[in-house]
Image (cartoon, rainbow, N blue to C red; front, side, top):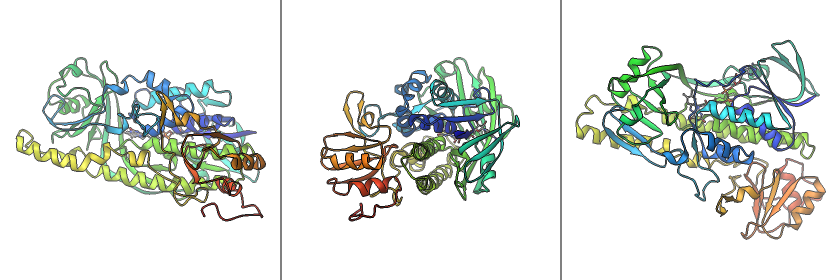
Length: 497
Ligand SMILES: Cc1cc2nc3c(=O)[nH]c(=O)nc-3n(C[C@H](O)[C@H](O)[C@H](O)COP(=O)(O)OP(=O)(O)OC[C@H]3O[C@@H](n4cnc5c(N)ncnc54)[C@H](O)[C@@H]3O)c2cc1C
């Protein structure tokens, strides 16, 4: 019996496998694509939070090394009349790309295309003694019973698993299997991604390095950026499903260019959330559970958060130190984050290049008023650390307090407080004996570390704070609450007291 079968090996499925492996739990990822889709670079931004979580698995440094755009290269987004036109306004410190060495995060964000991230996650899965990736196979259906799930593949093979995680994206077979439905709506405007090679373009762009160039000219509003420091670029043309890609690129540039189109990829933004996240043994994660417009770069960040939240909980149940009820807190905790992300991304989408464009951009006074409108409308899209790093699990039954991510600190150069957390629970502080004893009595793996601050903090495997307080007098009850175990009969005052 496979402990966990994961349908779909895109970023979220691979992340789920790596999180389970982090806790020593074997899994099998089933993915139809033999190769990652190199010419479909949907996500370009990996958030600071995703990079922090990748650091836990030892993958962040590899991604950073192999990303063609070094993080120090640029953290700017420039709004322009055309790629070879005039500047209107700009933002710096975008997408947390400026956070290197900053106490707020263990990792800055990283501009890197989605297929490269997927390739590196695939390599980490191949290197893991616990996770296995089966490519060239598709899940066609599944049946759940009291003891497990029978999963059928397109090869007609049936694999028995204790649990299934559906990371199979927008057309999820897993979602169908548990009778869940997406609720929400699609945006009416079409978009077209184009990947192209443009020798010499970078040298001609007069605005310096930037991760996004937003073109506000009404003849072709959209945005573009570099995929590497050689000749490869991406662009998104708004309001377009087809048409001549060469003409679209020339209109964005506002000039004639020597261009080779490598791929086109039409897409529509969606604001969708499932009505249920799971059955007893089958769970949805990533785009199979929620979809948000890409503005702000939150799509797979939310999915990686799902993977880690669900992964540690499933592992705790499979490893025998938490009750099955712990997995029910996955939807309770992650649904509000997806809801908030969809709302913020939809707000970002309300004002895009077509809305900000103007037919008289050759006039300095018009450019000035457009610049002011851009600053008002777009600041929160480029500076959203309150969402990326600041979401909490407030209201969850397994946290006392707001369940925020543990505030990050550098203890020395390259020495993150997070690197001192154990793979499972960690108690931070000095007088930790009560927690150490309670964890031993309850069979909960616990690391202790003196972080030099007064009081105590119980940190979950996902770096969120389950509880903080002055002393360990209610350690047993607190620990039981944090793993969803019923209070002991000798219960003292409630842990939140
Ligand atoms: C233009 C654009 C730009 C974006 N930019 C960003 C960004 O900058 N940052 C960001 O974080 N996000 C971004 N996103 C969102 C991001 O691309 C998605 O959120 C992400 O791909 C979701 O990952 P996933 O693993 O949940 O699903 P998917 O990527 O959809 O993967 C699903 C996987 O399941 C597999 N599969 C499908 N059916 C089956 C089956 N029956 N059995 C087994 N496997 C199956 C598929 O082959 C695929 O590998 C962007 C999206 C778009 C459209």
